[in-house]
Image 1 (cartoon, rainbow, N blue to C red):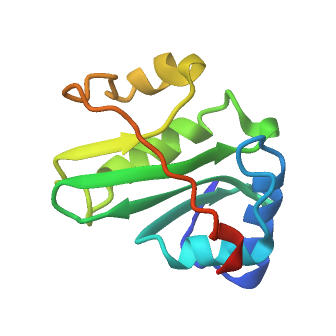
Image 2: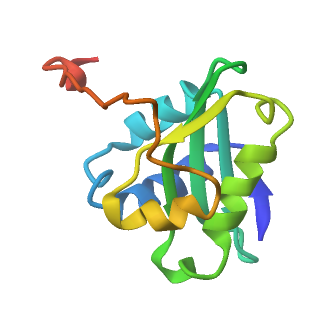
Length: 140
């Protein structure tokens, strides 16, 4: 397992392939995948011995109060082998953000126990998630 820090066109293509395997990201285009990486402050990836991307997440942050973790993904072949744990620990200990007040992420109810292992909780001081779906999303 090696950490990925260079997001070359080939590596972005590998990420797009990972996205296409998941219900929550399968509609993303290659161009959207590239723009998503470019718009995130930090991107973390791990590749296997064959240099194939197997795990990824990205962080949007103000470097002081919030570091929001998005798109935590591990290839189906590598789930249950510690890749996700390594990914989350890498984010939480990264020198640029290890001092932020809160790390936050979205997760499905069935993944809450998994993320609790890393110190995440549902206690968000009574806050709730709200969403507005932009009708112009694909027009950008």
